[in-house]
Image 1: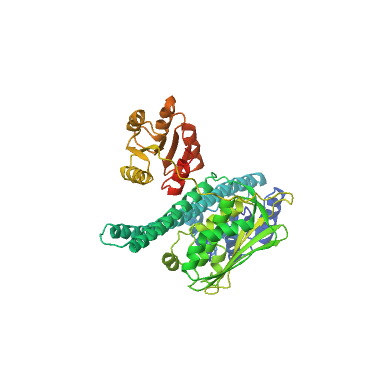
Image 2: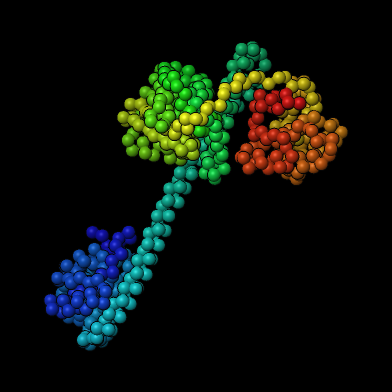
Length: 520
């Protein structure tokens, strides 16, 4: 049985009246009602106990109650109140506070009134008691709120610990083969085929590592409202093609049977091609990872009214019913042992939901149960009929860059030296400095045509380096590229304001660097 007025219980302000006679109870009830006070007459001790447990603002009794054996029932209820509760008791006594039974009761919140007493005094005492009861309810709610907050914080702390443990595990997964590959490359006597296999393996693992980091950055951008969609009118068939191209290697490694059903008509939406393809890629990657080798994956794009509906079905491990509603929550893990075996931080589907919602759409999941496959559906509003998709443009490979003078400035000597070696292999003349001040001195004599500079350097950071370099008229047209681990839109704006022409996040791809140099 619940204690009197448990947290989350009632806000009752009714006065429970336990009168010695039925007529006394009716008279008291009538007086309280005329004063606007809710009251209820108790038909004995047990009834009074029930009324108090259901919710009461005060208890009104007389001194005759103290000598009744049933009074012990009420005392027991009052003594077992929750810590926040101290139910007001108003006692009408002929002997006032000198009544022996009253002193023995040791009530904690007692107001004694003379018996008989005036209506005005009684009503005033009742209202004072109810004001005190309201304060108790506020204290109860504050305690309840603090307890809920404490539970939420403990759960968040537990999720954080689980996430950090998973993150460490996921980072080690690609780092282990990369380290092994480096050890293999250092051993002499390997033929070209072996070296090619090792470097391809290291490239795949590096791509996985970058995807993990990119997902974490995407979560940060979305939750802080810094992610801006680059909208255009685009055909959803382009989204499917772009996502399939990215996921094809994973699908092929699992020997999955893939079917793709696309409509003959263009289904155009007002969206960001990169973000929508990223969302579909996450769904396809999950389908490939959580479907046993040789399974089936089906991608279907269709029109439903004014919606473009994109569905990914698989014959994989499926979802338990209790997880369907939570599968898009951040860090959600359907089966922790399975997640650890397949890899994943539990943020991919949360990203999908956030990105699709930003496009005005919705995403949902269905599954008949564990082992029975899953179905994930993205629904996006179609663009206006008079909108035309942007024409497809063939992306020509960048022309080979002519040999130029390049200065690399980075306090991380390994990062600077490795980039310099890569650039030198392409025929460029490269110099390296490990501080902003040294970079300025070197630039004055070397006169580079391009500069790749880290941003977060001690002392003179990259922004100050860029600003001071631009003050020299000789470097007004020099290609100045920020090469840094900071990659938000705000970081890019700061780089441009400092004087950088471009902003690349580490590790930059060879293609991205070559494309910039080809502009010279």
